[in-house]
Each structure stands twice: as structure tokens, then as C-alpha cells.
Amino acid sequence: MSADRKDDHIRLAAGQQDDPVRRRGYDDVEIIHHALAGIDRDRVDLSVAVGPWTFPAPFYINGMTGGTDTALAINRALAAAAARTGIPMASGSVGIALDHPEAASSFTVIRDENPTGLVFANIGAGRSVDDAKRAVDLLSADGLQLHLNSVQETVMPEGSREFSSWLGLIEDIVAGLDVPVIVKEVGFGLSAATLGRLRDAGVRIADVAGSGGTDFAKIENDRRGGGHDDYSYLNGYGSSAVQCLLDARTEDFVGPDSAPDFTVLASGGVRHPFDVVKALALGARAVGVAGTFLKVALDEGPDGMVTALETWQARLGEMMAMLGAQTPGALEHTDLLIRGESGEFARLRGLD
Ligand code: FNR
Image 1 (cartoon, rainbow, N blue to C red):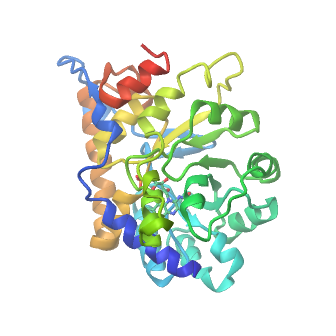
Image 2 (image 1 turned 180 degrees about the vertical axis):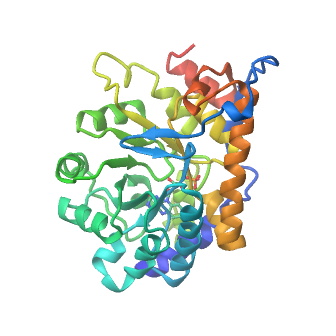
């Protein structure tokens, strides 16, 4: 059952990536072009500090899969490309391998292919400190992604409906692990208020993982097959990464209590390196990519993934030179106009 679900996720998520009608927050973000702002490409340094790590470029392969033969092949392709480029990579939720040890090889292939690179294990909120440790150990992981997915669980027929223990367990896991924890959504976004609660629980790195890209409400609805049993009115639910990054500038997160060492990452709906530029300009330290790279891994295998990761790095460097940003962090000085739904969101949240 669980393994079938993982293959359904891969198939349905891959099918969503070409959908032209979906809302994309990044299309609301316009850069005011300054024709004399440019610098020389060889002055640009793409590397960024995230927690204790240095990423060679401000993006990473986000948590996706594991648990089946198809997932193993995808993880092998992604991990081989991560090893050849140095780009960090997260696994899909390791929960299935903790419950069914025969599924472990579809995850451990990530470390086998990439013995020295940055690898993050992934597990769902609601798991114990012991499970979190086992997830990290399985991959000899450098960090743990802990995902919050109450919307997905709600729409998923076999999903949990019990969420009240999550924050306390997150606090225990952050205190109990000897590697950093990255808390993330799975495509519905983290609000400023949620970021604040995570910060108060001791979390120091969070990925807002907003809507507009892979839609797990739609994936689980498609698995249900329609009729009265369906929750299709939740398709498209959530806040985009653009909205979340704007929200993170409000007093619900930034204020006297704000932790200067808190790192906000962004994912959800990133199609190409220009979306990465926009997320960095909105304040993300680095950007996660799932669905777009899933398609590349499926269609083009490890060599296609290497080409994609190298091309993304090259294009990012060129656009940073064009915009006059010597480092990814310098993109925060980019002049932006926020239009459309994202602009209305910013106004309603008092960010004029
Ligand atoms: C995911 N995602 C995900 N996230 C997570 O924390 N644990 C998981 O096991 C999975 N599984 C998963 C499977 C597949 C096939 C996809 C495409 C995605 C969510 C992912 O990390 C990310 O938050 C969202 O997909 C939004 O980013 P994109 O896809 O719009 O770039």
C-alpha cells in the first residue's frame, strides 16, 4: 500500500510539472532593471552559508522519494548528479524504510552514490526522536529535513488526523539530534506565525515550501478517484513561496524576538534559475527544487541531471553579474515590484 502510494506520487507529480494553468507566485515578481548595475562574471561567488554548511550554489535538490524500485532509480540519478556537482540533496521521507527495512536500499543508494556530499534525510512530523535518529543514521546524513504535511494527510485516505503533538516533538528532535534540523512544508507554505513558533521551539532553519508547484492536495485527490469522497476544493490551497517570503518580513516573524541566526529557505514552484534569483531577492538564503528536477531525472537520467545542475549554476552566475550581485545574499538589494495576487497579499499583510 505504502509503496504503491510512493509510485503514485512520482507519476502524478511528474504529470503536474507541465500544467500551464497553475498560479505561479514568481510571475508576480518583477525586477526593475538597472542597465548600469552589472559587474564582471568572474567576481561572482555563488556559494552560500546555510547553518553549518557551505552550499556551492544557492539551490538544492529537495526531498522527494524512496521506497520502490522506481524511487531507487530516481534517487540514484539525483544522487549521482549531486555527487558530480556538489549540489546538496535531500531524500524522500525515510518513514517507509523505518517501518519496512526491505525498503532501505532505495534510500541508502543516495549515500552510496554520494559518499562525501551534503545529504539530508527526511521524515514526517509526528515521529519520535528515536525515529529521527534512525533516519539520520540510515543515510549518515548531514542534517534532517522534518516535513509538515497536515493538508496532504487530510486529503490522503490513509492519512493521519492528529497533529497536536507535532510542535512538541519538533522541539524534542531539535534538542535530541546532533545534526541540524530543517523544518519544511511539502507545498502549502509556512506562514510568518509558523516560522515564529518554530523559532521559539529551537528550530534555526526552515524551508517555506509553498504552493504553485507540486500540489499534494491534487495528487491525493487524483489517487482518490473523484465522487463524493473527493476534496478537490482543496486543490491549489496554500501560500506560495513568494507570499511566504513576503510574510516572513512582517512583525509576525521579524521583531524584537527574531533570531538573527535563523535561515529561511524557499521551495515550491521553482521552474528555472530566474525563479531562484527572485526567491533570493525576496530574502531566501537558498532555494529547493523538487518537481522540476524529478522530470529531468525521469526523462534524462543522471547525465541530464548533471547538465541541468551545471547549467543552473552557470545561468545563476550570469544573471547575478547582470544584476550586480557579487554574492547570492547581495540579490536582496534588487529593486522589485510585486504585482497581482502576491502584491495584494503584501498589501493585506501591511507591507506597502
Ligand atoms: C515531494 N515532496 C516531499 N517533501 C518531503 O518533505 N518529504 C517527502 O517525502 C516528499 N515527497 C515528495 C515526492 C515527490 C514525487 C515530489 C515531487 C515532492 C515535496 C517537495 O520536497 C517540495 O516541498 C514540494 O514538491 C514543492 O516543491 P516543487 O515540487 O514545486 O519544486
